[in-house]
Length: 86
Image (cartoon, rainbow, N blue to C red; front, top):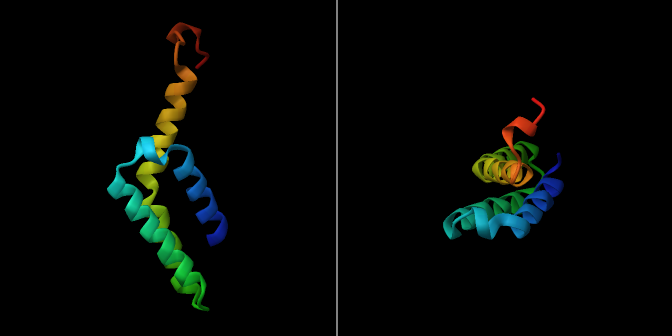
């Protein structure tokens, strides 16, 4: 995924569930990494863009896990374990 699409996906996720799944400090940290990646993309150093992309990915790992957990909880809400096909 290129840097711009990654940023757009993360911003969309933040809009959708950032306020409920992240603390203010966690959101600020992610926004700092987004800003750093945007600034890096203005230059011509592909290695720096790669490193900034990896840093943003790392900064959002816990958020992604929380979003996945929330999705699973929502999907299983009200379901009986006996009714699930495993």
